[in-house]
Length: 123
Image (cartoon, rainbow, N blue to C red):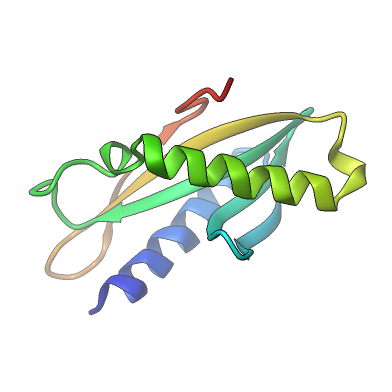
């Protein structure tokens, strides 16, 4: 399977996990001219921007390690565009999470999920 298919599978697993954890999914794969945010959700009084990283191994590092400073800055800019386009979430506190999904390399069966709330802070 290609990376896009594996990534989509991980995003589906992450969305199911968030729903079971009490989050309300607002958007999946929100795209704009700058890029894309995998999942935008509401949790209590927070609007949560979630980057999902799916891996079949850690040979090239963990998923959260891939969300470097450059990627964080891009996510922030996309989040700002999203918030500017939707008045109803102005009073919600933004939060930036990373979810790592690990799949079996042979079968692509789900093995593990790690959720990092407030994975990075933006000042």
